[in-house]
Length: 219
Image 1 (cartoon, rainbow, N blue to C red):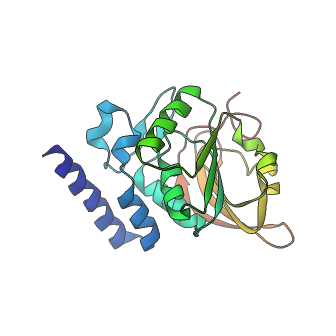
Image 2 (image 1 turned 90 degrees about the vertical axis):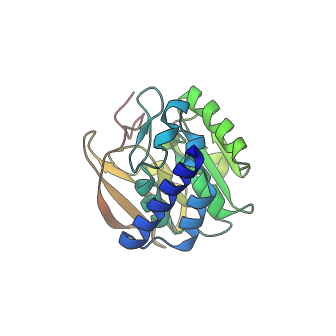
Image 3 (image 1 turned 90 degrees about the horizontal axis):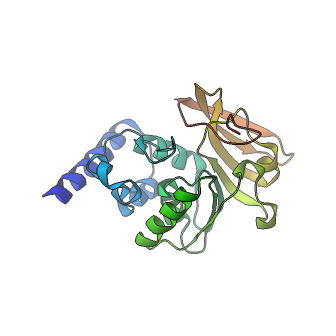
């Protein structure tokens, strides 16, 4: 009975999005294909499809499903894209992106909390997702050895888009992340033009846990 309830809740969310948002089939299908309950701790599984963030560990959270979908849709992902993610968390957003970019695509993701890296690796393995590489790094510095990226997503609050990340974004590439102060951020999407300038679009107010390092708020 319990799993039916989760499935019903999942379908209710999809219905809600179809009425209020313009997410494409690729985003909705990825959401259907990835079970959020497998990316959260046992005692929160019954809340997997509440449209709310849930606690992970050490003050980190898994974003609410609508936020994950807004950010995913803003990236305009395509099959074969190479994506850089700052803040793996439990691997849920990672999994959604990995599903959309497909086996020829790649997600390079970074996380600074070692316990979350282990958790994310287990969760991605359970979800049979293998086009992801996780690094224990301050992702705001990028990873030069991984070359250029089609899309970049930041899942923690930062003061501005980190310059090292913009340097690793291909021309016409898209970067999405919450920019602002520790207590309030605006979701910003930047599209890098041929001259390396960012065309910005603002997608509303959000609240994320702070990013570590130079461009964030935590040392």
